[in-house]
Image (cartoon, rainbow, N blue to C red; front, side, top):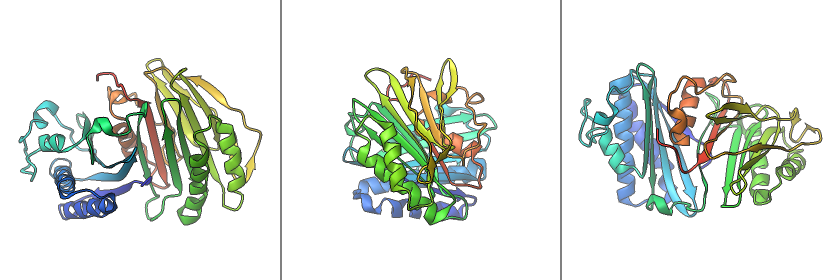
Amino acid sequence: MKKSTALEITDATLVGEARRTAAALTQSLGFNDEIRGRIALIVTELATNLIKHAGTGEMVFRTLGEGGAAGFEILSLDRGPGIGNVAQSLADGYSTAGTPGNGLGAVVRLSSTFDIYTQPEAGAAILSRIWDRPSPFVHPGAPLEIGVVCVPKPGETECGDSWSSSQSPQRCSFIVADGLGHGPVAAEASREAVRVFDALAEQFDPRRILEAAHSALRSTRGSVVSVAQISPEDGTLHYVGVGNISSTLLSPEGSRSLVSHNGTVGQTMRTLNEFTYPWPRETLLVMASDGLQSHWTLDKYPGLAFRHPALIAGVLYRDFNRRRDDITVLVARWKERAAS
């Protein structure tokens, strides 16, 4: 499932709703009873913590599939008081809220991947991923790890944004598409752009992908689209964008916005230029639709750039979401992360 499912947790009655939502989303993944039980415990623990410690918050779920492995991602996001002593809170069995799983230590133990980011009086963000096989066997040929939040406009049931990725040791390709408007007609346009991308992503030619998408989308409302292709072997990023998908490279030296052309794929598109950028190992790529505020920054989040990309995407979604549009935030970086 490329889309994310977001659920506000505003009172204790929604803890069960979060657990049932997670169970419904994972029904088609073929998880055994042990994995389903782990997911139920993690969701219950994190949702209960949101109520007990922050008063309110949001959970974002996404099913995962990589190289034949199936997984489930859980993001817990709040703007509460934060976690004062992270090391203590992660000790197995430690719980100040009397939660069913005996604290965040249980979440760590039950998760295949776990990460956390918190600031005093600015909230906490927690990532848990559960896979159906040991983590080293999950898409070992993918050089980059990614995180994505893709959520519809409030009140809409279908997201007009779409995204996809394709990875091999030779090239890593990403697309973010935002269909014009909202709802099913916007989703139709963005999904068509992703269909073209999925068919051509193995070719190292982002311009051809955009040109093919332009022809394929003529019968749709149209979409703004950006494609990034990274060559791990020579450390370069090739980029072509049409419209207002915002893409940024972040490194210790600062941030750099990637150049997009004016226009709409499927409607009006001028001759495309491909732009090439250096891709050093410490670089972070952020691609976002215009549901994310344009003035987003990581400057006020010390150490966040070194956390898992899914956690970074979650914090950006939590703090810079316009709340009146579909939103997609895609974050990618090398798998070998620096220590925080």
